[in-house]
Length: 100
Image (cartoon, rainbow, N blue to C red):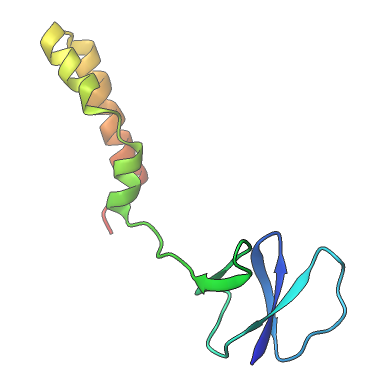
């Protein structure tokens, strides 16, 4: 069994033994397979849980694309500038999060 040092809800160190630290730091017991890269501290439950996977480029894009209603509104109104602004915004998101 190892010890994880927790500060502001993040694992900051993992050791075989605990040692005195500042009051805002706490130690929790963790299994031997826990690492800072794969686990996060759930303060509410005072346990470590698996770190969620990093979002994919598609998920990042979906979160930042402008609403499709902006495009449709421009089409309905015949507003070429609004349609182009939507297309430009989408292309900027695609450039920010390229396919991997």
